[in-house]
Every structure is written in structure tokens, then in C-alpha cells.
Image (tube, rainbow, N blue to C red; front, side, top):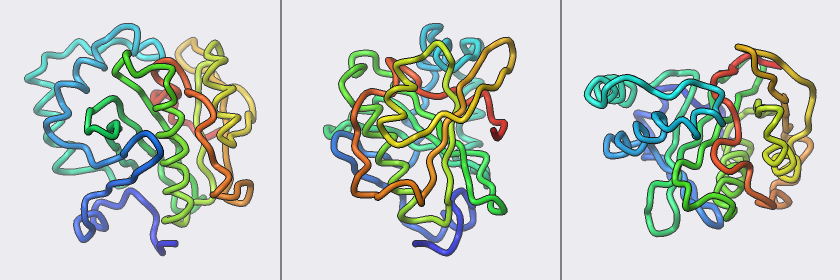
Length: 211
């Protein structure tokens, strides 16, 4: 297990690009060529609804300016990764954020942007792969997430992946179910991608409050 916590930009500069392989997906560092996919997904009203946010309205050129800056100067409290299938097709994104060194925890978010990949287990495998990676390689002891209350399919899938519901929170008129998983609760070899977390976005990145 690594001595440090994930998300520190200075640590990333001395490490090779992250690449984590699951059963159906590969999680890798974000690249500039991902920007057009990310812009299209964030502009899609259906995908935005799963994330409980409004569709992106800015221009692609303005989005690219921000995107380049985020790649150049990553936040020390979060890390975004692209999800690829085994053929190298960019199908979505996942992230961990609100990294707290004091509490040893971080929040998880995921989105499968390619709708032709929905309901085939790609999102579930991405969740299991990322959680396994965090517990194997960092000092984190807890990973939590928020998913919309009406997204019952996502909640069932996250429970099968080891997450436990712990209550509800409200933000911007939406109700979210908070869920968590602890290092001590899981045998890493027992984490399996049982089901697809949701048809699009399994968690809402807008709710960054800790439960």
C-alpha cells in the first residue's frame, strides 16, 4: 500500500501515467483528445439528468480552454480518469474527489457516456476496478458516493459491489442516497462487477458534501 493519498499533483509528476485494467474496461489518465467526447456527454440533457446537473451550455472552444488548464494543473483533491473498453474506445469517465487526508476518504463518481455501452456491465466493472485500486494502492479507508434516489437500479448495483446505504441528503431540490464502502468491509478478491451501476451516470458529482 502506498504511503501517500491519491490526488496530489506533485506525486503524479514523478509517476508513470496511471493505467488500471479491469475485466471489461481500462481506466487511464485523461488526455486532450478526450475533450470532444466529454463536451458532447456533458451537453447531453439525458446524461446531465443522471448527474443532477444542467446540460453544458458553453461553447466547445471555451470548454477546451478550461479542459487544457485542468490537465495542466490538476486539483490536489481529485483525480479524473477515462474509461475505455478493451479495444481502446473511450466510453466514459470516473473520478474520485474531495480527497481528505485527515479522514482517509474520498467520493466516487462515474459516467458511461456512450449509450451503446449501457446495460452491459462496463460501468460496474469500472467501479469495482477503481475501488480495488484505491484500497490496494492508497491509504484511503473509506470511499463514498451519492446517487439520485429515483435511480434504484444504480443503488442495487452499488450494493452488490459492496456499498452500503447510509442515509439521504438533499441538494438543489434533488434527493440523493448516500452510500459507502470501507477497506475493512471487503476482501479485495471478493469485489465483483455484478451489475451495471446505472444506464448512464451512477453517481452525482454535484453533491460533494460528505455524509
